Length: 432
Ligand code: AMP
Ligand code: MG
Image 1 (cartoon, rainbow, N blue to C red):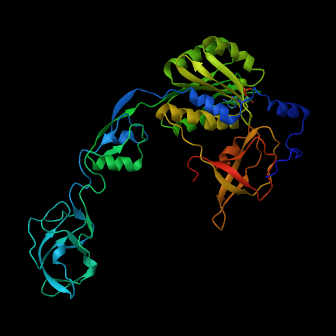
Image 2: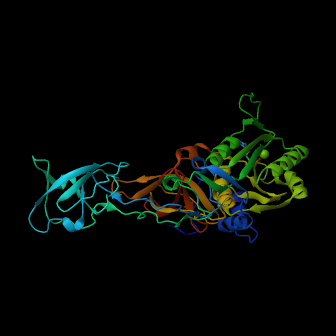
Image 3: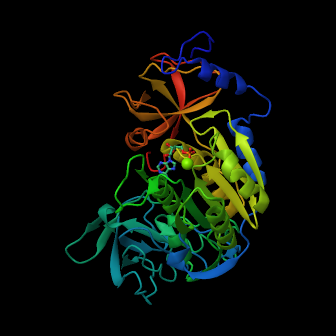
């Protein structure tokens, strides 16, 4: 990777941009990592608890430790369809014929007791009968015309038997408080006969768009007006988070309207998200409103896209003022809001997983900001990860996010990437 300062970013060579690049190194400008750390330090996990039926608990965080009330399996049972007998009655040398004295199905135990020279036919899951401990697979047994079965030597005592409690012993701590219930857990809890759980309530997230130019779908567009798309991408990203979503619509760039919306949102939600109105020029406009109402910081972050970000406290809620540009909204949500929601829901921090991939594109970048370019990664014919850039990378080009399945992460020092360089990518949810 080229870290030489002289590489030109041919997408923007203006003097204005160079000035802005210089202030990226100002001490007051935060790095992405520092901004994320500051945000996470300010998130207090939800403490409210609710009791839900098992299926409704998928994705929720446990508010209690779960101990096994029974063993799983609850009884020793057969792992195979076959014949069960006492291990000490196995043939030691020559094949031997056995009488079949009963059949045992899963859920229908046999009450017969095998004596020497006797076996019981058993199906997978069938309870191991008294005085037996070893199952011979039916494929390894020869059926004789007289109804007896022939078993050869070479079997091991205890084979093909699932022992009681071998998966989960009694009173075992199966799941810990704080654990997020996953698909396998639902099955495990069902196997323990547990039908209800105490879990933490979902975080409540309110959001609205700000901007006099924004119109809702269905309204005609006058000159200079655009449809509000951020509320839809925000809705979609929140939908993937297992949170309660409160969509508050579009709020005009008027202090009174904003103040009222901020007030209502902060009373209902744990996190309030807005988009727009934090860039230079407009920031001053909503700044006094927010400063009057809460404890809000206006940050410049050394990143692209998504440089301006507002974060702080609004009543009991945490407030995120995301930029207005559609791609910047998605980038800042995924880098800052999503980890905050996870912390709020779970009390934990999830590491941001990155992968290494070979770049199939030459990437222009100047040192200064951490860039989240949009990429498409896949496996090449040899199974190695490769990534190429989506087309235009402007922060208003939302189609670049639609085509992409990952962010290409270019750190502050990076001064461009040559084709063939190994670079870091951050896959999108569901892209693996
Ligand atoms: P702002 O930060 O409010 O100056 O907005 C930056 C850019 O993003 C402007 O071009 C806005 O028109 C655009 N923008 C702001 N909010 C939205 C939105 N909700 N949907 C689509 N574009 C938006
Ligand atoms: Mg605006």
